Image (cartoon, rainbow over all chains, first blue to last red; front, side, top):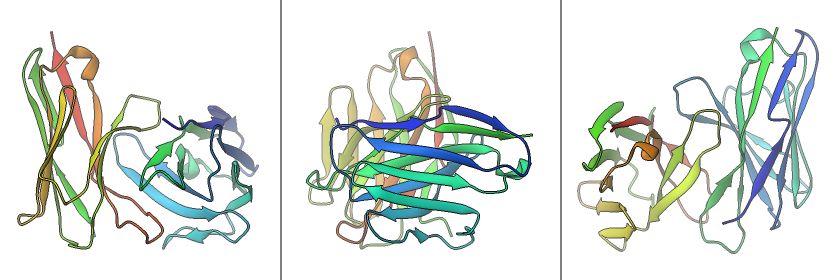
Length: 116
Length: 113
């Protein structure tokens, strides 16, 4: 199947700093990528849909100025958590839709963010 | 509002047994139903998926049963193995509408030797 990578896999930062997470589709071009947030033992919550070359579409309740998404190329989307606070600590996962692969989404391995 | 309801929350099965996880949905426009397997600290991995034009799909030890009239679908894991111990999520989406997935709440499966 298609491969999606994320970097970093883990990050620890101080409160008030910004953190950038990268999501890459390694062997295919993804016009659409998705960013999810997952708390321990809970389901995935869609944060935003990232479309190459256009602004991301954010889900209700997700602050677009806090969670900046950039989808500058067909293989890379980034999520920047600005002015991070302890309540932003979570597992962030991206996924990418294979354009010619029907409806499948392939997920990255996730990024564990801990804000001190 | 939870678009896809999943049960049970947790499941313990003996090695060699059958694991069954159920999901139900309300939106009849959903036309793609995947199941994902997630190990701790990892991203979800696509296990198997079904479209509503078939009632069953089997891939190895994994089978999806789909009941369109009841708006329910289930995952059956035959001959369950300790390596199957993971969290399983069902999902539903509408093809050609941006492909947003609506996930179930997850089922933690433990297969005991």
